[in-house]
Image (cartoon, rainbow, N blue to C red):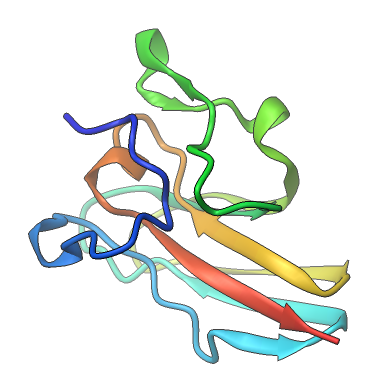
Length: 122
C-alpha cells in the first residue's frame, strides 16, 4: 500500500485510487467556512479532516503501524468524525489563506486515495 507519497505529488495518477473525497468548490475565500460532509458509501464509515499544508511537496506524517496519518503532527484543524454510511455532518472553521488537504483518516483510507486539495484564497 502506498503511504510515502506527498498528497500533492505532480502527475500522481488518482484514477487508480479505490476511494476518494470531493470538495465542491475546491477553493473559497478566507474566513468562516462551513463544510457540509456526506458519506456516500453504502457500507463503510468515513470521516473528513481538514489539515493545513505549507508545502504540498512534503508528505503527510504517516504511522505505518496504524495505517493512518499522524493527525497531531499533520496540522489537524478540525474534523467530522466517523460518519456511518449515508450519514452527514458539518464543520465550521475560520480558515486563513493557504493550501489545505481534506482526508479520511480511518485506517487505510488515506493510502487508498481518500484525500483532496482545498485552497483558501485571501
